[in-house]
Image 1: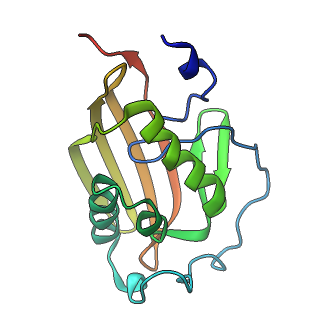
Image 2: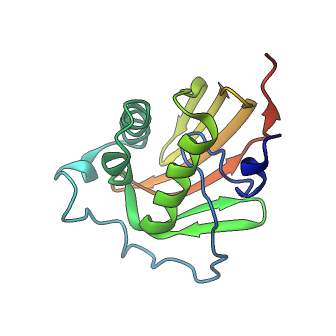
Length: 161
């Protein structure tokens, strides 16, 4: 594996969200405090269903519109990975930026999208020039049209040339 990949943390492989250095944060978000729309984002996002929010989120990520994709997260959203937590928009921004560093222009392909009420399970795969995720999954909890919680599971493997 190229040396620069070793300096990136494991969670740099979110579907559509990855992080470089993340701080472990133990504080839980406010119950509904972050489930409001931010001033720097379009209005009306709070009226989406969970599935609509995630489908729109994925489209923005595929289009490379990071700032618009961040509008899909509540201000105090939490992304949970094995042994790590990213809390808030700034830490999530770092993660989403890290994905591009790892995979370049490669776009994750959705294998399945399953929704029950406010919970969405997404399975995916992606192949970049050096690394791939053959079988990844993210779970989202969406409240008032915004992502409040996201869990991530994936395994990075070298891309077979």
